[in-house]
Length: 80
Image (tube, rainbow, N blue to C red):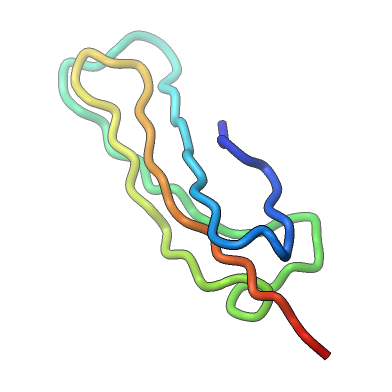
């Protein structure tokens, strides 16, 4: 789940929170997930239309069924 599913070109830096949820019961040990950050279904190009965002690590702590991680998306506005 994402805190924002779209960010407009003129929006400026926007913090996006990703929530990962485990299937089934909580684990007795923490669980780590890697989240790939990219655009899909549009014409936005990483490094051109928005600053490159590294993949992030999301950890679900022991005894929990979900965890969150955040990143900042910075759109690049083009002036012609």
